[in-house]
Image (cartoon, rainbow, N blue to C red; front, side):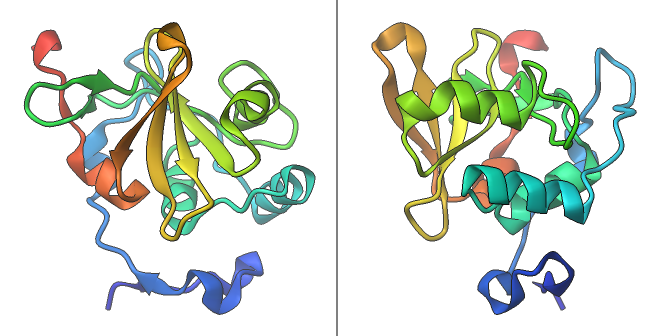
Length: 173
């Protein structure tokens, strides 16, 4: 019926909601043209991250991480038909990998800039950060343009809307 309930994650009714996110297979998330081999985060990985950062990973982002724990989507352009922006990499989440493409690394290095309620989940090819603003419900997707004095742009009203709006980058066709 489209209702997602995540009691196994200890979130109860907080995250029971209607989700109409597209089939994630359509994104063709890959690692250099090959399937992403990193296993999905476990409940323990999510809990460890949330307890240590104070940031709850919203259900639609959890869904994406469970489908593909990191990687680059083939459908990567956002911002309408002009493809104004492109997400190059979705960060991964594990409890033992804190590399530069991990959510751990992004939170550690970007929290002083983005604030305490920002959850970076990806970046473009130039290192500009896509992040969720967790201070609003639903969390909205913003982009921090580091080469424009850390200017923050609102990209989508929700992660679901963001994922649903991803298209082929017209410059890459």
